Image (cartoon, rainbow, N blue to C red; front, side, top):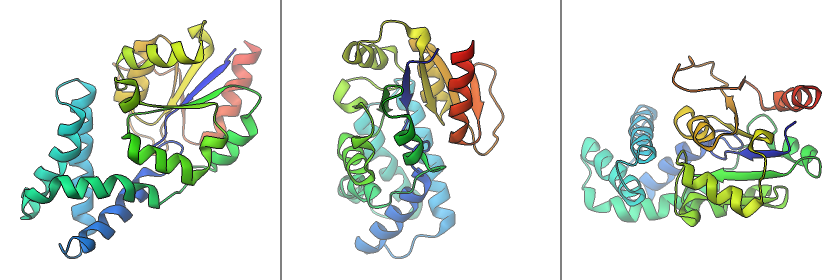
Length: 233
């Protein structure tokens, strides 16, 4: 039986792609860089994912992700990389300007409130995530919010989850489930933590064999079926 849910934020509860798109569009104009094309936003998104994956492998620091990605992207775009730090500072807050829920996720969270403890586990920066949590209203629904920057460790590292479990008083790891869209962050994190995993895969991407996925869903409403299946087991 599942008695604890750990929810990822970006790409799971919230549509991160839309927030990223709108933030880049607005800030390119604000900084006087002109219009950024949809194609260039896709190029940035791929570059950004690569930086976060390097962080997950403990190859670089969070600061090297945040500023380094824009420094590299600006070089690709022919923009002076000296603007990278200031751009990133504003980007963190701009990400919270677009709040779009995936699959009516807010209503799902509300419906489960009081029935099963729910916690947010995210690698985003404290500045960005606090704004998203506040503006989205999910902070009033969830039992607690855990941001890697505050815990001193990032998903998928076991240290991140150890800190979360200590704070929430989780005793039986077999009764916890993490729901997230990232194999390398959420699913591997669940594996490292010794808890059950649910891969949110709305695009139907191919599963990679090195990741142990206990459940795979395309719509967040499927979480109800998982909870029922676990309760009946």
